[in-house]
Image 1: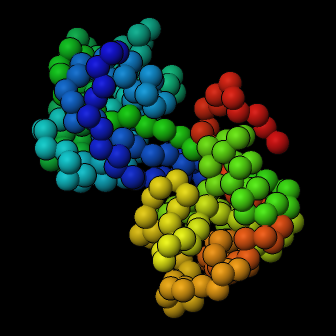
Image 2 (image 1 turned 90 degrees about the horizontal axis):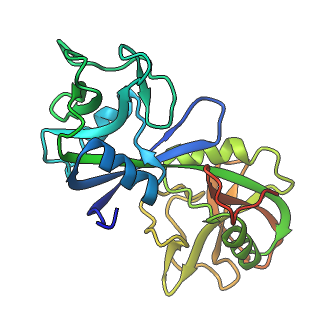
Length: 261
């Protein structure tokens, strides 16, 4: 679509399934669209309309930016078997959190979420309401021993960026994903410049997991890059010229510019 929706990044991350390094980010689009137009927009600008669990629905509905009564997610009737439901990406939908009396019409082929109770309703697809898009990501462990700047360049060339471990969910993924690392510490996208620590993806350091009581306020000149300490499952400052393995962030849907290790 030529129109660009007004987006609010609602940084709710979750595991896609157990025993995986995949996690998901949801984007709230406050512009009203029909379900097909919302799907088209999400596929063009993100990955797809959001696939969600019941826990995610509660948190998506709690987003203070959601002011409408309903919003779209990526759930629709199966075109071949109208009593069955599928996610926009084609997966069968199970454990659907229907509201009382729902679904109530075979002619209503798309699914909207009622904000007030996070339950879903079958709805006419031409209804114009806000919606959630999603993007799926994963952490990639690179078993090369590079300096921090080299690791940053590698991740940006091959994937998206050095990993930002900015939530408990991603920290749990990092703990699992870094297990086969060849170094005790691994580089992450944490840097100290001009008096403060920041993530190289531009995010402020809000969630914190430092190995000390407080973050290092004025680290030594050779201690201004961040590592993930695999043994303690925490962050600590390190010499940027050390050669370590590192964690990159990767979109789980590969693009033509991405290549594997």
